[in-house]
Length: 495
Image (cartoon, rainbow, N blue to C red; front, side, top):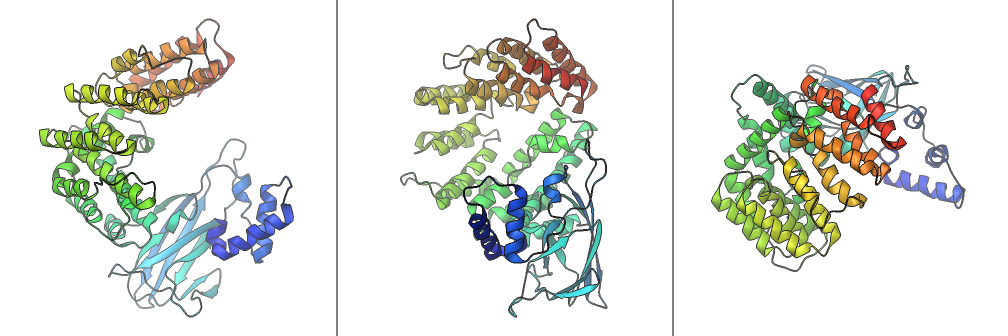
């Protein structure tokens, strides 16, 4: 945020003064703040709230366009929800990087804005400015831009300029427009994520009401246009075509429903894979490399995109695509690509999956870090009834309950599978309960980390709540329970 407000050279000036003043000293956040402020003669009146006030600010944005006056206004309202010990909150200093897009998809030049009773010129060295940083420092603040020839689509919080939760009046049409045109990659990605979250939540609601699921063709088109955009950075494309995770969607629900979210996410992935099959196949083929492994951005980006496309294709029931993933697995010249092919093959239970998992272990059994990845991949699997596979892996020669990293990979990995850990029959909870009691006698610190997987049990439906609570009570009743586990388990029950 300092760098966003001061620019690179201003931030550098602040750093130089900071080192000059404090080299070799023990310093505070306030000292850093003072160096940034003093080096630039900046007015950062309530910026220190970021250090002293808990909670994530909520920023609400409402826009309006006046065609006659050719002015465009953005009204910001900020609120920090109360937290324990801080019921009343002061407004924060929120830097909002902003651009306005015209109907041609290009950034509009920004000339001047009227706020806090005065007109501020935005141009710099007579060059047109396409992104400006607004300083939102009050509970309510309005910024009015002049010389705006048509109603723009705003690109707000460019480069994620402040860690806030934002609600705006952007329509779905605006979001699709930003997804296709925004020059700011963060907001282009964020537009896609917001659309995906909305889409997933509405399909979850359809699923819960037993309605047939249908994918919005505009969403498919949005993903297709990004996949085919040769100008974009490949790593960006890989991130932009990846759907929000299950946990993120469950966090947005009143009552988290892992079965519905899993069904919907799987449906969208398969639908995208089937409708964009040719594009995804081309992406895999065009991003292969038989060259020696190189650790640099172009190669990392190429691998990321290829592996994301391969994972989509792996979701389809298609012998040809299974063969493709096997080919990628066998011909990989590095672990990144070999593991990604394994991930693609891991989605479908059966002989091929079992053989490839065994082959991978035989190849890499000498490298314990890779073996940990192998444990985690199987533990996190959404294969139905996976708890039994994980039980078997507890007896695998490479697994050792006394080794914390092995526990985090296998048991922690299993807790990261919403489908199997939160299985409706309680088998996942029962498994974790048993493991925690056993582990507590070996390593209480690790056991307390594992038991924290139960901490959000009240987010789920009543059936799951009673099953999870029963396991917490079973843990609390165990003989000789450590203080570490007792503290986390008792707090979870009382939450």
